Length: 214
Image 1 (tube, rainbow, N blue to C red):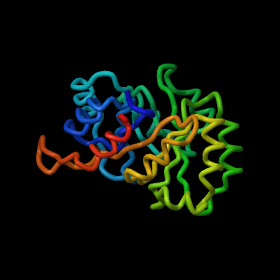
Image 2 (image 1 turned 90 degrees about the vertical axis):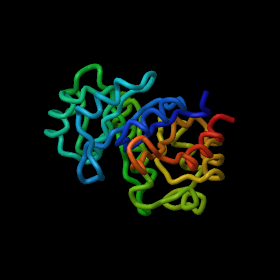
Image 3 (image 1 turned 45 degrees about the horizontal axis):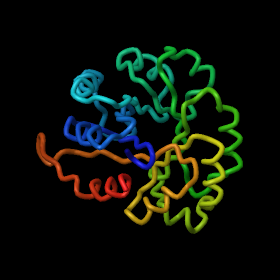
Image 4 (image 1 turned 90 degrees about the horizontal axis):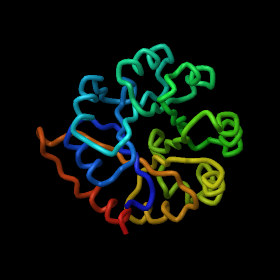
């Protein structure tokens, strides 16, 4: 049993998918936005899905145009989609009832906690969770400790009110600090390319999962 829920993100291969599923993650995320890196096909997602159990499939669209998201959802048939500001409440209402939503916020050094809270209040009840993406602008846990763009205590106030999944670059000490947040919905860990088909080192991820399993 993990100490918090984990979303594996940017999965591109079966090796990653099977590793994360075996570790007990809640969600397997697959990037479907070309602007965010390597895109995986709907057919590949379905093939990988057939090899894993006990996980929810997340189609990661980010800031993709809504028309493309709507078309893709019907092809991929995910459990959850992760979307940015291009997907509002009206668009969410067009989704199949079985598809839940994670609303992603790209956090930068100028992000206002007050504005975040206001947007989250407006969306509350329409989404499953909110993803705070610090990685997109190379922000780390150390930035939060220094109050950039807001303090850890402010983040804790937000996680106490809303279901938040943190996407931030974490080492072992950072993960331990992150897990001290009250009511944290989960964290995101990234997948990556195989060294060769079926072979990949998971040494760094193993260290993080050791903490998550304590």
